[in-house]
Length: 319
Image (cartoon, rainbow, N blue to C red; front, side, top):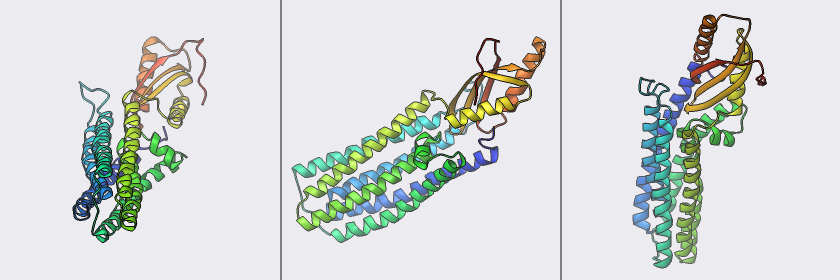
């Protein structure tokens, strides 16, 4: 299969780890700054943003665990490897974003609406929001650059690739950083209107909007991880690459069945029925199928391949 090579797969894994580490470092600094600003100013929007950044920081730790555990080699107990652990830990991260980030932001915003308190030291909030925007932009640019390179390689739109990619950690960082930049804009407007009008209502509404934004992002991430954990069919592009790889084998006459699903980031499980060229004995057919499986598994994307024989009346799959 030409979808990727071992070197490009390794580069993608290293790039994903770098993306998460960079996001973690940025979010820790941002969370500390926002917490200080929230205490000094009393702004509801800054409290929401602080909760958002602490949630993101915790999520990055879970995403690093996901990257590490998913790379473990197959063993006797888990012959297909541990790739799906990436989706388990990424699911935990999304649930944390929903509970801590969205929950705290919405709750505090509602409390501020009921018991409004004036904010002070607006200059501190503006400085922290500006610095946060710069750091978040750096982290977002790294995630966007990685996704864009992968999307171009498979002729896919960046946003579509962010939703469809089998790498949950890069998707999470991209989504969280995009939400963070939008959230900073909302927080800025909330603080500015609070300062102009003297009313805490715009600030409180800003906190609630940030919480709703985080909740929507979290639900999208939860759904994507759920789909991969349930064994979602591989993308049409990868399926087509699988058919082309099978047809390109000189021993294969035609393909009548193909099932490919993701076992983890950039890891696919391939099951196919093929009709072989010639009329071989049973033992030679078995040896030929095992040899073809081994050749397919040399691809960095195929963890395990299983081939069976087709019957004459089964229709041929075309690319």
